[in-house]
Image 1 (cartoon, rainbow, N blue to C red):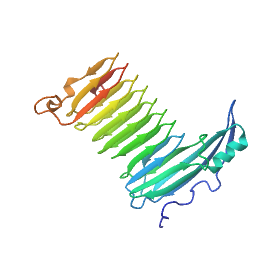
Image 2 (image 1 turned 135 degrees about the vertical axis):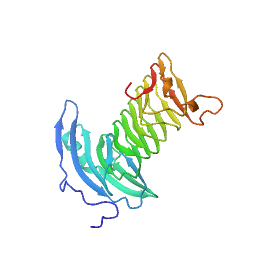
Image 3 (image 1 turned 90 degrees about the horizontal axis):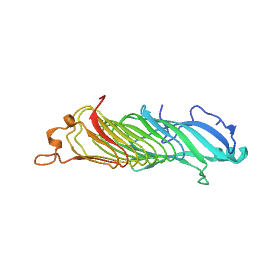
Length: 267
């Protein structure tokens, strides 16, 4: 069976459902739909969400998406109207397939929770707001950005660029390099095996922990204020020390009002 160019029919919700719940201040409505996309020759997946979480795991040759649209309003009729007009669109931009949550009025009271199954070889570029991002299986190249939400990513064999604010960030696996930023929250780096690339982790008012399964071959720079720095020197390969023969790569860990630790995994 050949897949259409981009979008199959909604798979599980022939008639979108809408539920109304009542709160002390707002009325809310929800609508769930399932989609399938053929990435064709796309090497990169860009996901643009709003006010909703994004979760990604390995899938088959196509991209499967479960989308739960949500809207709030002062009355149930407006909430239902807003959620009914929210859309999930797809288009190609060069080698990138772009999936986007849209609303005709750019309504800020509308969002969507996305659960995606994506081919393992695709590069990921994930963007949302006011919600978390979770990449449950390893992908070789991951960019993830949110605000007021946590990020938890598994990356293997490529770079990871993760940015949040007011949300913790966790990076796992074997990235070749990493750039991790947040504010008012912690950063946790849990890396398998040796690490010999460039890395940067920056936050404020939050701790930074780097746990290694092997040795650190990169140089190491740590900086904090009003916090303790603890480094297990046995994890540092000779090339990680500055000076003659030192590594051309460096890991920078910077925070304020919090601690920094570099230790062996499980210690």
